[in-house]
Structure formats: C-alpha cells, structure tokens
Amino acid sequence: MESPSFQGGLFVNNAGIIDDLIREVPPEGIFAYSDLLRTVREKKFHGVGMSSSRGKTYLLFLEGEPEGALIADSKGELYGDKAVYLITGEDQFTLYPLNPAVVERLIFGCRIYDKSHFTASYSLGLPEIGKKAEGIGRLIIAVRKEGVPAAGITVKVRHNGQIVANDISDKRGEVSFRLLYAPYEVLIVRNENDIDVYEFSFVPDLQGKALDLEIG
Image (cartoon, rainbow, N blue to C red; front, top):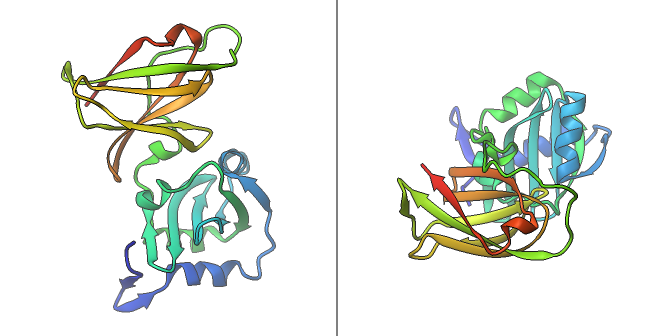
C-alpha cells in the first residue's frame, strides 16, 4: 500500500484526521454498499461512509456523489481509484454527515477519477428478456480488439457491487463463467486505474453462446 502522504511539508495521517472529525458526529445509519450509494444520492448527502471490514475504508460524498476514497490498515493508506477497486458488496458502511467544505478538503488527497466503479459506462446492449429466470448457466465472452482475439485480458464479473467471478482471456480471447441468470457488470481490467465496465443481463438464451465484446 502507499505510505501516508506529505502535503505542504507536513505529515498527514488522512485516516486519523477523518476519525477525529467523525468521532463526535451522530451517525445516520449503517448500510450495505449497494444501499449506501442509493441512499446518499437520494439525500444529496455530504459526509463520510466508513467501513471496518478490512482495516478501515472511507468513502467521501458531496451532493450524494462519491468523490473520494481511502483505505487504511497496518501497511499504510491507499487512495482514490485504487481504494475503490477493493470495496466489495459485503462491506457495511456507517454514514457520518460533515460540512461540505470539510469534505472538499479531505477529497483533495484521495479523489476518485474513474466513476465507472459506481456507474456502468458502457452497455452490451443485452436487454433482459421476459421474466427473470432462476438457475445457473455458462457465460462465454469473446474479447476482441480491432476485431482480433485479445489474449491475456483480465475479465471480472460483478453483481450488486461484489466481484463474483474472474478469468483471463485465452488465445482465442475467450473467458467463461458459471453464473446465475441475473443482471451483472463485466469489468475489463487493464490495470488498477484503467477499468471499463459493461452492463448486461445474463438470460437463458445466452447460455453456452460466445458473446463478442470489442474493447478499445
């Protein structure tokens, strides 16, 4: 993990600062990750969501939008997009309201630049067909770049904010997963700061069929 930062020549323990700010603030509730995002947007919330599931994870919100992130443990602090990538759907967050000006100051050193972590930025164009089906099927994705099979690409599948499967594309550019029929997001991970997200619903008609995905 990255070390605690220096700003203006002064050592800054960002997690400690946030802890001091929220220590005397009455929390507004405890929320699962997926519920947290919906709640803060509905309330146009200013403040901090804090989880203690792995060390401490902090999400900073302005006007209900996630603008900053920080994970702190015994190894140090991880900031921004790198921190968000480690959050899972199992995390529980306690919400603490703060003055917007204070939140803006905190965001300065841990800003989130890639909002695709929170909102799907692409669509595979696969509408959900009819009633949701139960059961498990095999999803195959053929990853292409400029029409050519793209081998060695890390592909992850996310459901309700949680990574449920991952694979690396083979020489044919293919990955496959055993999944329940449900809505998902496919993440194309080039590195920690370069992730594309594709939204789709896995339905029985897609069972065992290779689905072409052209990436940039």
